[in-house]
Image 1 (cartoon, rainbow, N blue to C red):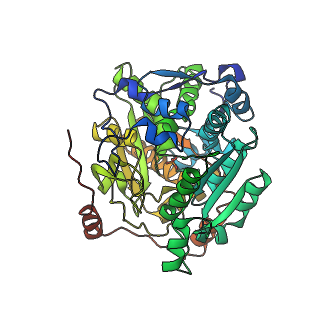
Image 2: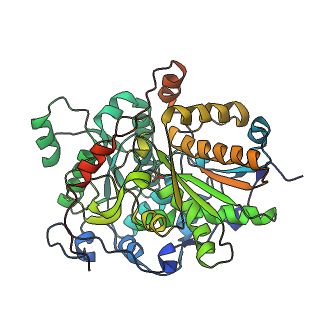
Image 3: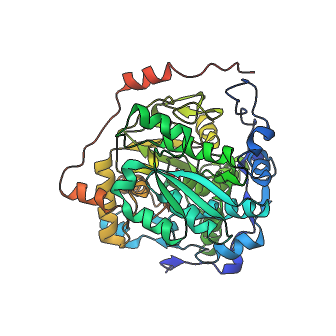
Length: 455
Ligand SMILES: *Cc1c(COP(=O)(O)O)cnc(C)c1O
């Protein structure tokens, strides 16, 4: 009998991150500076990022050593368990085996500290005294607050006003770790003041908060900026998830047939998927199905275009080749706040384009239904974001039931839902609405993409 919980020894924690850029058949298209319309130079990034992070962003080395100081903090919750969802399998009466990698064991409750810790560490090494960032639902802000507390770095988090008012406990968590959490737009920055002048009562947006945090970092010499998803180095830091998972499957002489993760900016998915993509490229396991799951209300990979676009609403950030719904696409206010992004990680986008990964999308009601089934069989109450992966795993297990296939399915369970109970409430009281974004609106937004001469 295989064990329910497959646990690694602390010493089996990966010593290196895996960089999928080393195995791409063709390199990524470079990000373009929106002012010069030329590829972004490292110098332009040095105003807000540490040099080591910039190097990792463009590195083509296959493996990059995880600093011992970072591994030492990872040890608080890593290696995270790989758990067999036996009771869910029995409930579904499927011949498939379902496993999940449980990232909800981190102190912040999600996978996000896997990158927050190294980012804080590299900033400390380079003498940075304060980091500014933005947060939507509060998950990234709390992860960075947790991380900076180890390195005596101040942390300023611009939190989207609507979430700040609706989810006060994420703000409390940031405070507990010593960070300052400011409702955004604020009157502390030019960008914030400009938005407030136009819309005095606005609930804010992620785009506006990004602009505030970048301005704060760019205008204070002791302050850097930090991003919790999308970028190449963030995806690479998350590969501890997939590398551990592979070792855990080795312990039970198994290799999964289907690998699943939810996608917002793409980081937790990339962390699970890229080591398996490596084995597809190497042809040691060419047939693994790798599935990215997104909300029907924000269908970047399933309905967007693979084109150059801005990463933020205001058009301040570099122009990046990725799947996009258009930078002024305003996704409806779904409960999985972490999955409301018009674009996607350039690396995840490229692998989808190349057919290494396929994408699926689901409505939030069926996603929450899956989350409740999971809570009632496996016990863990998962984040609404993670519930998208639960839903896709259940669908795959039910397909196996029809065909009789005994596939091994694994999904990344990116975080717990202990601060997200309003989503469960909305599901239980029947007030949850499903949105399918009208194709015409996506097509209109896609007409406003920036023009880049592709070389
Ligand atoms: C932030 C978050 C996500 C979405 O972000 P990615 O970068 O796509 O991983 C998913 N799940 C949880 C629990 C999160 O906190």
